[in-house]
Length: 368
Image (tube, rainbow, N blue to C red; front, side, top):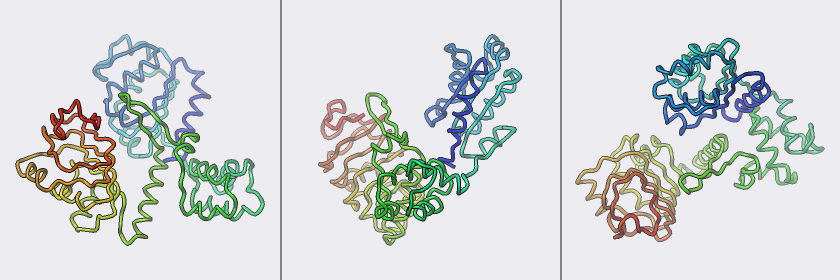
């Protein structure tokens, strides 16, 4: 479960215990890190433990000098937020073959199967906080004390029991958000929780990082899941009218059933996973006048019929601000009515050579 405190516990243990070991490493996993493969992960891990720059071409054939150094060191390792069970299995096998006696390895993950299938021997499940401790943590963040203020006890217990549900991160978020609000504002604030980017940055729930001169905002997974929940609640209240689509299976069902898509404002589709004719999605774009964000991910096989669809039936909503079509297989995109409000067009690793009558290098939209 996200926000339950796995990383906090692992970080605390690392800071308190790592000085007792000859080598230590805290490795925070991500899709980017795991995507580079086990050899890269192993090299990063061993480089930190031995304090030298190493390259590992094959985790099963590591140079004897490296193995010898590791065997003579007692190490403390934390692998945080691992999602790939094969990487866990390979690392566990490495640890068992070369780690010295007394070494400690801690792995955190949201998926218990990652640990069991990876061969982890001892598993500790972090439980939700009990009501009393939850109320105390919430109170410290909302009132700067261990108890709710007078006349706020009933509202506070409602927040703790109905919203936070024993999750430490949720208790901190809600407490900090409600801290500056009067009693009359709590009800409306809880019904519709809007958290600004600045507030999220201050609480380390949003980070900004750079890649190839571009800046990106990364939000904590708990905030993402809260947003998804709010969107689904809006969906049920608005007679099935959705404004944001990101689940590929759901997208396919909506188009297959020919539901009303007039109010859709953003749509992200993995074209590798769709179960309907992709042309249905392309043609339907003209029925989404409020669409502001469109992302088509994955590879799409093109044929002559596809070219006909793009030339005759492809029409983008004029309100679109952001379009992402990476790995686009076309060499030429027709000069149709492109959105006047378009701010960014991303077509990385695409075959496009000419767009809007311009060579791709000179397009004013800064295709990346």
